[in-house]
Image (spheres, rainbow, N blue to C red):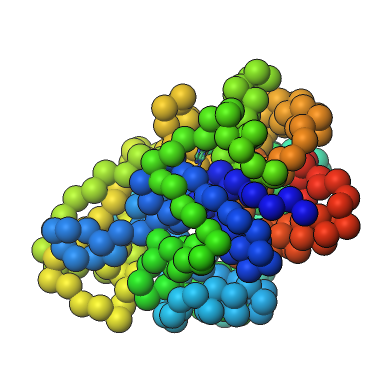
Length: 382
Ligand SMILES: Cc1cc2nc3c(=O)[nH]c(=O)nc-3n(C[C@H](O)[C@H](O)[C@H](O)COP(=O)(O)OP(=O)(O)OC[C@H]3O[C@@H](n4cnc5c(N)ncnc54)[C@H](O)[C@@H]3O)c2cc1C
């Protein structure tokens, strides 16, 4: 049995893996280069206002997976929360995702669902060959809604014109013909009462888990353990020998005010003239609390430089070429498994992250008990 396990990264991937292995008798060391656990889901209390802040951008837990929901509820009290996003475009405020209220307000009409469906059909611009995000949006929505809500946002978020982004990004019709403005369609939705960092600390609180923070992974760590689960960036493991996998990074500009700044948690700004993508007002994530002051983050997106935090994997044609070389290189490695959003270079929601870590831990334990080879990926990046 592989007894000593090193886990690089104390986000949800690393923490769930650590807990599952520790419960089965493995000795687990978890290291993270940051000074806190929970990775990009990190929350902390702002000293000045007392408000819980989502340090790396707003995180709402949502899932249809009962097993994952039960898992998360065994470590934290999940408070009911419904994500309702607003958008300011052309100096007016609308409800997102585009729904019957958005359509009626935008076009100054009072359409019923069926009338709205026919109306949108009449203004959509069907294309014979749908090649890009722009083609797809025009096909689904028509030009006016596309230009107001879908043209500027990808430009700012991805730094790319929608005419060169793949159509696959907009798989489904991004519009509802009713007044449902719940951003997510999932059965369960919530926010941990004490925040994500406390939740992950609880997952990691086990007698066979040792957590070392402010500790960067170095090559000599390899020889001290029987197996490594690596949740850091895949290209970093190979010292970027095959080039850098592209990410978008985010910058958050914090400001504090009195009262209520915008009346909701997330206000999106699709207009291209506005330099930020959205404003998050953190106190609205904890409606069970009340505060006189408030703290807001203006969010700016940019290409991830060498010293920036990687947020969203870009995964266009060029990046996929680089990725496929790294996958080949990874297949040659031994005693390491790459896991999570950075280890497999995919965008993963928290519930998917947890599900994948739970599945990977079960498969690892099974293979290890039979002394069989452990794969480098349980979930393949491509
Ligand atoms: C802006 C934004 C908003 C999001 N909102 C939501 C949401 O509302 N709902 C939702 O379900 N999901 C959301 N997500 C996704 C969520 O953040 C991920 O599912 C989650 O962070 C994945 O966990 P992870 O452990 O795989 O990665 P991470 O959380 O990134 O953890 C990886 C850890 O590895 C550490 N590390 C990296 N390299 C090294 C090294 N060399 N040595 C030591 N440590 C290292 C890092 O410091 C980090 O702590 C959002 C993501 C972003 C970017």
